[in-house]
Amino acid sequence: MDWYTEDNRLVVFSDLKQNWKLEDYYNYITDGFTVEGKNQSSFVVPKQKSPKIAINSNYTISTVNRSDRRRLFFVPISQFYGVLADTKGLTPNDVHGQWLLSDQWTSDDWIGFYITCIHCIN
Image (cartoon, rainbow, N blue to C red; front, top):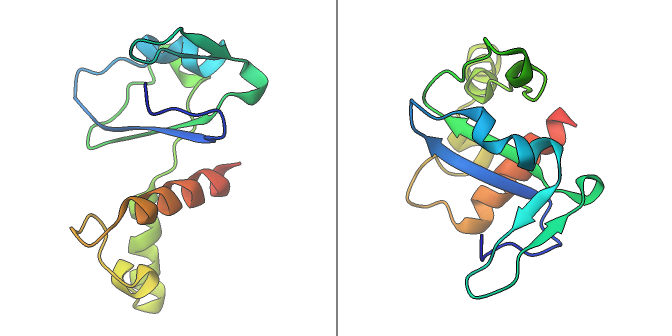
């Protein structure tokens, strides 16, 4: 992760494949965050200062394993917009000024969206 800096508070693993395994990320979630940059020494961000991790996927993340269940907190984001549409007639375009997943979203738009999601689950 050569793009990581210590002031980051959120790391997003996006659009995970169906056969993705949470256990591959256990060390990031529970032991601290190892950062390995290209042509740089690796270092560990201690657990107390580790960034939050957000995972998004179009597939269900398995929670059969107890170790997986205790490391996950599910936030069904899509339901938020469905309820908002049903109760107030608002769309994501009404909320954000543009459609989700559109080409109009800038990097800052996505960062703000993910930070808001993480803030809501803290």
